[in-house]
Amino acid sequence: NLGVWITRAEQRPHTTVMAFLSSVEDDIFLISHSGTFKSACIHRDPRCCFAIDHRSSFLFEKAVDWNFTLIDAEATVIRRTTALFSSIQAQFVAKNPWEVPFFTDPKVELFHLRPLGLICGGSGRDR
Image 1 (cartoon, rainbow, N blue to C red):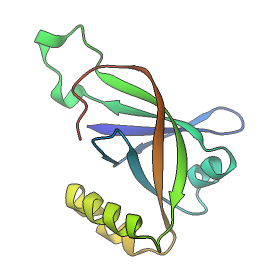
Image 2 (image 1 turned 90 degrees about the horizontal axis):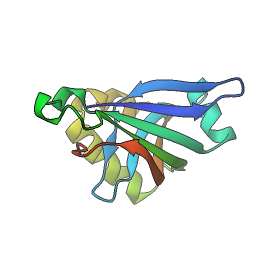
Image 3 (image 1 turned 90 degrees about the vertical axis):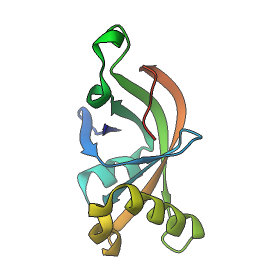
C-alpha cells in the first residue's frame, strides 16, 4: 500500500507519497528531511491528513468498498535521542529496508501522526 501525507501549505494542500509504518493502535510514523517544504509545513501547522491506498489488494468482489483510507491527524516530531525513535527506526527499516540510508542522515526527522478521526475509508488497512 502507498501512503500520501497531506500537509497544510499556505496556498493549498501539499501532498507527498511516503513510505510509512503503522501500528495496531493506528498510529502512523513517517520520515522527512528537516528543511524541506514538507517539514516546514508540518512545523508551522501540525494538522494534517494521511491517505492509505488499498488498490494493491483490490478485489472485484469488494468493488463497493473504499479503496483508500483518509485519516485526519496531528503530527509531532520524535526526537532522535529517545528510545521510541530507536524502536520505531528498527520497525521501519524491517518493513522498508531501502530506508536504511535515510536514518543515517542527521537531517532526517521521524514524525508520529496521531489519528484524530477517520474522514473516509475502507476496511483492510495494511499494517
